[in-house]
Image (cartoon, one colour):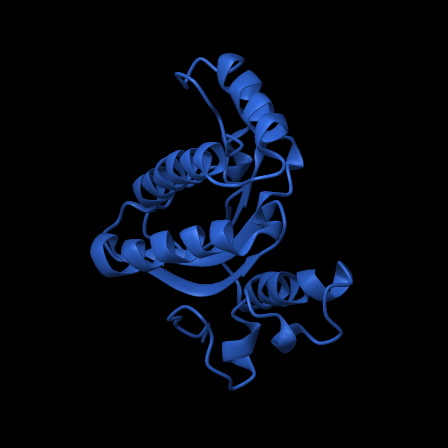
Length: 181
């Protein structure tokens, strides 16, 4: 894997993308989106994650984040490990019409990756890009917030509930964020 998308500066400000393996549309269900939100809140309160921007799409999520503990890689690793386990457990035990199909995909991906024992939910990398200039930061912030508009989900970014675009438009969002300065 290329070093161009790794987190080299553990205290830096990063644009990250977490993608479900095979681009499986897991987050079309509210219960799985809510699991992400609960875990992000935990990472904010207990692990030092600072979120500046975020958006959950059907099969991936984008964030602009920083760690106040100097271990952004560790926070993202723990977040992905926890949410992977929790979501797969929920898929297997809940009334999920796509259960067999999704479990088979995550099982196959897990068997193909020596870092896993049984399942793989998230792609291995975080497609992390350090935000070193105001222009690049603004570009990524706009990209994150306009993702649901481009996907045809909403006409205006601030109308999408699962995004910090609401906060940036003066509304109350679902997660506490710090504003990009």
